[in-house]
Length: 446
Image 1 (cartoon, helix red, strand yellow):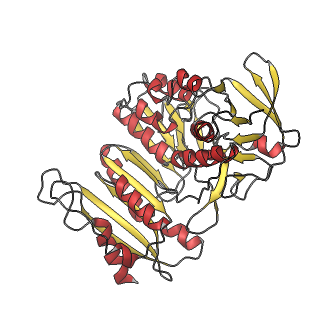
Image 2 (cartoon, rainbow, N blue to C red):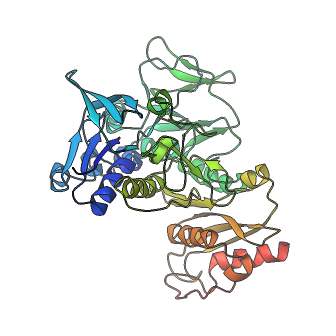
Image 3 (cartoon, rainbow, N blue to C red):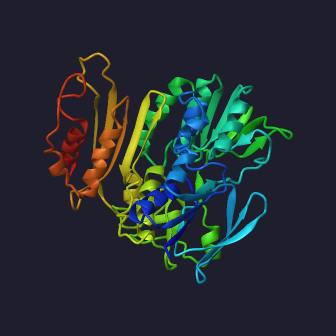
């Protein structure tokens, strides 16, 4: 009898786990369970549909139904997993019509994802308050945008800022409220975040940092948001205060939860229960620099974890080395990216760093269309290893973040990076690569 794999969650991590399992074992039986009415789609693309850069939410769907049939996946949509019995190796499921079934498994992959966090703000139950985590969320927001003239976004992570830009692009006045001292607090240090904030404010977005939204005002429907006695008018409010991992199923099954609140996993994405794996937003992994537990909550991490979990669930052998939290986005005409530690995180873990920061251009300064770019490099003083990088610029941020990510993974020292053999042509880059110049400045400060 062929191996049976059940995967709970059919989005990024779950679908990639299924594909990896099929590549590992052509005969394995693979069942995918998901509460939504469609298979894998890009949640990261939702704000860009709202902004009109992507025509339809349907364009975000990764695979057509024929793909799941071709791969011989038993895809069960609008179906909820209600219970896991790790001793009997079974999962209980219930479909949208209330039909219940118990499925047996040889390997189980939990890719249950995350849900929007609801901050303790008075009035959050009013009409006109939204989150942006699913396609259905996006559709409701797009409908509300048709008549809205003003919107408040609570939270300044990537989704919050991307949504604020989408509102602005649709002629809706946007205000962002962030309780921490700077925008993108998980991604950037305050000095780099300041550049992002100034650029967005120049576009017309009002940004309030270091203050919390206290109350959503209005009778039944949203009228505004109260911040330290000031009421900001709003026809709609987007709660973008972050997400939390979906771990309730695992907890009820007695599967260990880690210190970050995610399901604890090892280097093969195995949980504390035999033949049960976890991947994606619900799974805790290891920070490559600090070797401490981390919950990345990133799509790029989710698919890599899913591939490892699926391979191992099907009897193969694959390792996940951990995460650097590498992330990038485009905010209007500004690209923002980071990998590894920020100064704040380095300080938290007792890592002393030297900082190299440089402002340059994406092309030779005399070449038409040259755009500004700022690079910040963090180097551990004791080992001279690169431990973090942040870049804000008009273009060409992604490949530089990828290069720094690889440098960190290979434990490259700043002395090695500064000798990098980089290319040059005035139409595409400056003579001296900005990350090399940042490395030179870091060396001076060591």
